[in-house]
Image (cartoon, rainbow, N blue to C red; front, side):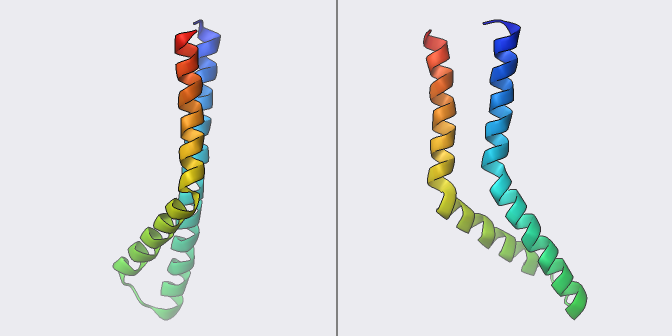
Length: 86
């Protein structure tokens, strides 16, 4: 393995992490912003309200997209193991 191959593997690994984390992070950020606007308008300053909704969104995303996330991670791991063998 040379430096170029290691750099490519690291780049691909970072890309896999971004693909796996992006749906949860983006949706929880969106829910957080919407709840912040709602709390500012209604002057309700309950911190657990935001946490509960964000946690619910993350759990739903994991339930819906968990299979895809696992397949993506397994494909990357299989490609790494295939490179180790060869």
